[in-house]
Image (cartoon, rainbow, N blue to C red; front, side, top):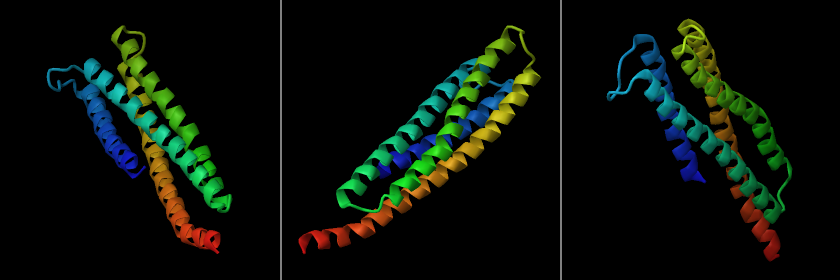
Length: 166
């Protein structure tokens, strides 16, 4: 579980760099490794979706593992309630941001064919990017809460084991 969290953080950092680079490339029209903005934003969108899906699966998987551990140790159910609250805070924003970032990518095609202006898409990208930063902060807080719960479970485990032995 720790490894997946670390990989998630690395992917979030890479995604942030890709999004900033793609946004700058849109405004200043430069090439990266002979890739125009359209091709680079496609790579960015794919990596972004991969990263956010990875984060979702981390929280789903860790929540299930923690729930099973709570049941096995006969620990207080309040610990799992924290996990549910974290998911209830994070998942709506995460899903919304994935949807909006997909729309930003689609709007790039609309700009290319002349349906909307680059300025309209640019403003929308900035709004969605700000929401991405907010969502990333929620993810970080969720990771911290998961770690705190895992530490609490580890602290409870010796007491539960001692009770079973007696």
